[in-house]
Length: 412
Image (tube, rainbow, N blue to C red; front, side, top):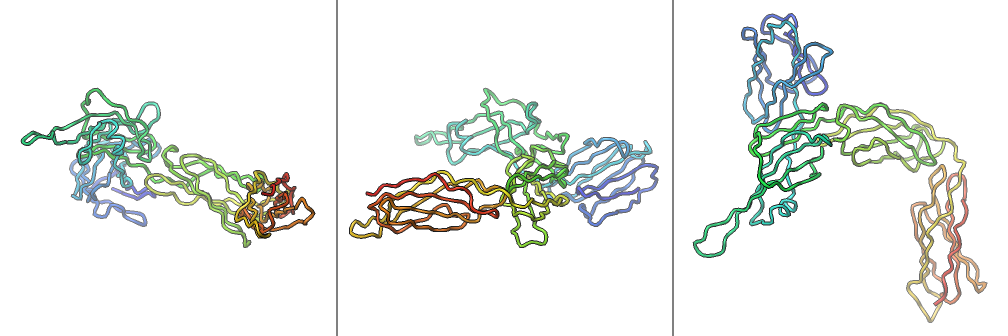
């Protein structure tokens, strides 16, 4: 009997042409320390310590190329579990694996949603939650929640009153409530129900609570990146996880042999495309992708190298220029003109400076300030009496772009 470990925290047991009860372990780690497998006639008996709150799923398939199917799920409670695989050796072939599912998350209703359904909350609303399957339209976990709260009826000697209700609920793969519909009466549910979808997402009931276990993603594949202006447009394919179960993805562009900063962007939700901004021209970046689900993050994808083109496009003229007076000093020339603007479209390299020029209508001259490319406001100390015209220009590796349309601020 031979047993080996996969990278997905599972042990695989082959019974092809196997006699006897001995087996050997292969792999760097043993995720099920204390696991034993013994033969009893044509049966195989597995024993293993089942950590509390951890879900174990025994799966089988007929050969190396067949699909795995669930044989039995076991919820750990801290005790030693024993599972019998009947007639495993009699067939002379077959493969079994014990999956150690990521730590599950309890499914529930937020108390505010529960109150909206029940209409009462006396010291809190108690919930009993049961999953019943995967929603036929979305594939999300679906189930029933029973709500109750016990309130005093008011008078001396009066008995407390218990208010109850039930709702049909659908959750997403991050455990968020997608929908909750009040039921006229609570249906009968299977309190020990368990199910696993084609992506390995597992839902199950235990002691009046429902749980969701989502696989930790495998390394993303098919990573691509193309430059558009001063940005990379990145795409990838989630791997080893239900695509809609991905809660976020982290994109990293690391410059090679350059002092340019490392660029990191987190894309929320299950999107499989994202943008890495503020690229430096003529710089080689190594781009990696990490996907994250409810259960954890994948390893980084194999890096791809992309070299940005030389800068050739100056920034566009800034828009949204505004100006106003603050700190007025009618007795002197120490009033403050505050100018703001929106970030300029950068061209094909980042904006590193803004130049702000104000010109007085009375021939009093022009004043100029230069600020960093991340600053979108500045102020001048001048006399408020004449009208002042404000213009803003953006600068990148190519040079200065066009000036904004002049904004005139009248004297007060």
